[in-house]
Image (cartoon, rainbow, N blue to C red):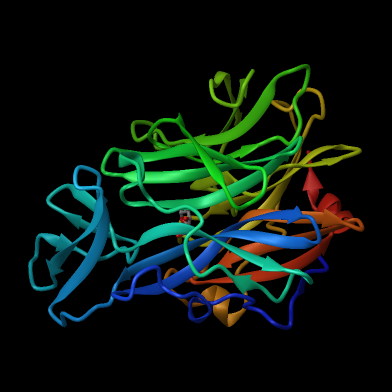
Length: 348
Ligand code: MAN
């Protein structure tokens, strides 16, 4: 596998991002959606923030209080045995889960795809009750002249996926929740098939411990039905515990090429490929037996949540996948992989 990582990696780090408030600090910029718009490459990045930590005996976290319509903070004492900090992404207290950071979506623009100018303010920040713990992991799919954005909306109600859209990356419209809890990793096919839109999605079943990829269809991008199980996790493989769509699928002569992520039993996240039938995308034609991209460099192996490469967007140009990816839930990296190498990795 000829994987080329930019020598400038990581291309975006928390130090490049101004916090949205003076009393917040940015702890991660990662999992960005990508679009080509006019002459530029645009990233819609997940920016994770928390209040500046001033209390040595406690962890302070922030979330939107929908009733008050403003962000509030809560402190969890380190010494309280009821507070579980074992997963750095979460704080669990007496059966309730909080997030240790709150994410919003921020735009960055670049002429060369490597050097980005970052917006001073959020493009989309939590305002709805379903977003009160944050907006995460956006994906952009250009459908006609509209850029459709699916993003994870997290709140005490659960993990949902909501839809937004823009025509110019200045004004954004929200269209509400399209997949209820627990569902994330929703990516849209860039064109309808026989008048139907298709979305890959990832419901979670706590009863059966399943985190598989499904496919749904819609006449209007808002009402989704016709759900079908698309592919499951594979015990003993790199994709054994959780899988989910990554970037929106790329149309190739052989079918829809989807770069997806998966975690193994050690919570190590890698990227692999799956090929879906062009006309019947619920049919899996081939899949990577081994990852096409895995955490190897220092900035991928260590960080807020180490051992993670995770993509929400790529460009496919000159027979090459140009992948923007979150590294260790902390920074954004850029890598290129020739399409031919990805195809060579597929087995049926
Ligand atoms: C979650 C994802 C991402 C994140 C990974 C690794 O499941 O949705 O937000 O990058 O875990 O922490």
